[in-house]
Amino acid sequence: ELSASQPELETKLLKVEDRCSLSPVVNILLYSEREWKGNTPKSALIKKGYKEMSQSFASVRRVRGDNYCALRATLYQVLSHSTQLPDWLQNEDVIMVNFHFCILSFRAHAETIFPSHCRQSWQAAVDCATDAERQQLCERVFQGGEEELGLLEALKLLMLSRAAELHSCMQGGEDVPLFCWLLFARDSSDCPRSFLSNHLSHVGLTAGLEQVEMFLLGYALQCTIQVYRLYKADTEEFVTYYPDDHRDDWESVCLVTEDDRHYNVPVVEATQPPAAGLRKGSLGPPCCLRNNAQ
Image 1 (tube, helix red, strand yellow):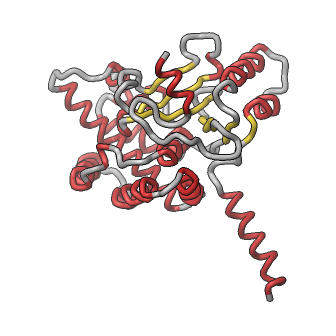
Image 2 (cartoon, helix red, strand yellow):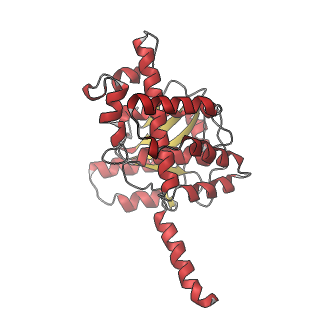
Image 3 (cartoon, rainbow, N blue to C red):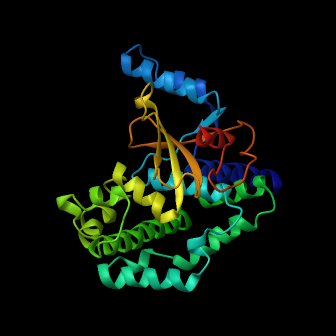
């Protein structure tokens, strides 16, 4: 019986690995050479960007390339480094009020949203005793199943809630971040309702996040998203922060993109998750600490 069940076990494990939303770690320079074999100017630029990153990162994990990519990469980085609940998630009653407000006001799809589950998953990550244990938890969560989908959809609703809050501040004449004027200057998203209908509801289905929406994602999570934009190597935009006005007081995570559409996860060590937990002003790899200090 044991010998008969072994192939079934191996098949099951392979299926789980196939479902994983993040590929195993790959040496960052090997990945660069594998993905960009040509000798075109763009290929040279991207490889130069990867070489620059290799001074701080040993490897990279490719993220499932669907339209949830930006949300998935960011949330994975945040959860895999979380050592405490973020301030905005401390009061569950406030979170529930915000979620219900969005559902009632903008007709968000309540059946796909799990705010309580979102908090439970975050708490589970925080309660992990070690970085390795937290990494293992995230590997189980990010399997492309209902648990992962629920978290990603909850994150979208959190973005809607923050967009509504910022739009209300704009209408009241209060100071708001610059990206808000860009977000609501679009004909297709001049208010939270049209933003939901024409943009946010399509994320994960037929569209990913646009660059201005990356700023909103950072504000929703109260986390600075530090992105290495490889096609911008040799420019001031090679490392961009979403947003860039809370680098000293918000935690931060690191992502890498080749085109502002698909985002992957850089890793400090190829054999283990980053040793540093979330810290104020710099969340994740030590290189973030160095870059934020520059």
